[in-house]
Image (cartoon, rainbow, N blue to C red; front, side, top):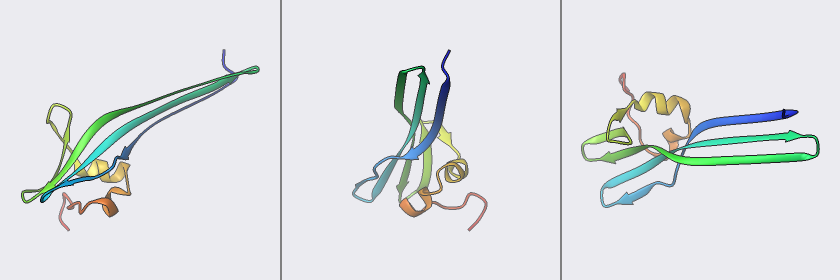
Length: 94
């Protein structure tokens, strides 16, 4: 059994891509799991796509894989630096 174990799971913005008047901002889910046991240590990490924020002439929206919409407000709360990366509208007014 590991003596020490650490697990993190979070969302972070990827690198924004601008194509014409459209800005795409990928949202990545990152998981890290590490532990030690005696003189041994282990580490695993995974990065997977979570959502895509699309900003164009129709507004700003976030889409999950499979094109289902995801709440911009929940992404803003989870990833505070999104506000400075892309102009996100407030869902409940300005």
